[in-house]
Amino acid sequence: MANVVIIGAGGVGNVVAHKCAQVPEVFENITLASRTIGKCERIRDAVKERTGRTIDIAEVDADDVAATTALLERVRPDLVINVALPYQDLTIMDACLNAGVHYLDTANYEPRDEAKFEYKWQWAYRERFEQAGLMALLGSGFDPGVTNVFCAYARDHLFETIDTIDILDCNGGDHGKPFATNFNPEINIREITQPGRYWENGQWIEIAPMSVSREFDFPGVGERKAYVLYHEELESLVLHIPGLKRIRFWMTFGEQYLTHLNVLQNVGMTSIEPIDLGNGVSIAPIEFLKKVLPDPGSLAEGYTGKTSIGCLVQGTIDGQPAARFIYNVCDHEACYREVGSQAVSYTTGVPAMIGAKMMLEQKWFQPGVWHMEQFDALPFLDDLNRYGLPWQVMELEPGSFE
Image (tube, rainbow, N blue to C red; front, side, top):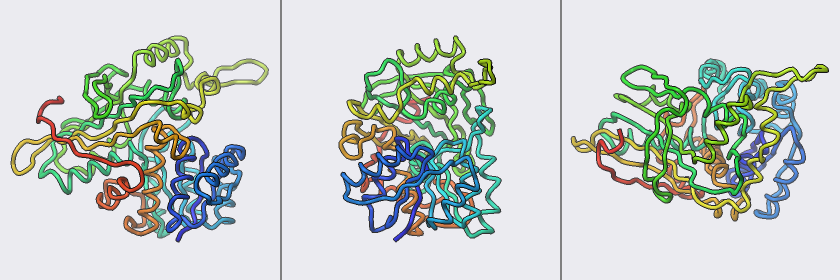
């Protein structure tokens, strides 16, 4: 049995704490840490009420390597589950190296002053983790995360050859707000307002934001328009899926959401450049916007509908052209009943717990810095079924999504 520290007490941290508490045979001791101790207290009390288990809490500034190292040296966990902001990945990785602790996150590092999504900063830690005998698992959420595992399953167990992969993410739910984001507003808006990018025939192709779209019939949700974005799992999957000719990431957005977003962009509210307000005060407009938008964690109660996320893989099976959609459908209301969250947080938090479980049980374990698709998909997929995210495979007509 293991001792873990969860850093981050937002919507995903709430799910991770609950799901770890549901698996006492693996997660014996759980400490939830955040800059905001009040959030930790609320999650601690909810976990106690739902599961009967008591978790510890701690206050920590994850931007401060020394403070985070001190916390880890005091608690002595086997593993840190990082569900804080992507800006804090490197400081938490540094603290893990200092304290001799394994590491897991759900999203790649981003610098605060540049909306740039690359793994190069974290890949630079490979040798240090290897030499320390420590493992870092990157992107153990849903996308990235489960989508990487779906691709590994297609590569190793379904297809002889893989030509194209389209990762399709649909939130068909309704939270009843005029405009809100389902996870950290600053990260969400930075992500979708950047140029789109996909990989084809050995090179990256950049497109204007939200300029390529098409309809897809999402299981459990129905027809929705999806747009090509850049997403970090593409960067690792192009390295680990042999013979791949093209890979794209798509996400759905409703017209109301896009209208609000366009207005906010037009008036400069999505900018990450600080503005001088006078009297020595400055703030990036997107940081102010984050403060006035609904907290994603507050959306859970009353959220209806479902998410539908999966990988449309095309290639050959038994020598013939084939297409398969490997996917999960998750219900917002069911998530709220179980752990008090909405489905977007749930679909990220459950895989974070399972990835940690894979490492702690040494089903996935090797010193260094790794991605999900580099390990055996089957034990992870078994646990998806077991812990709340059942997956399915649907046969499609080859060439029907081009």
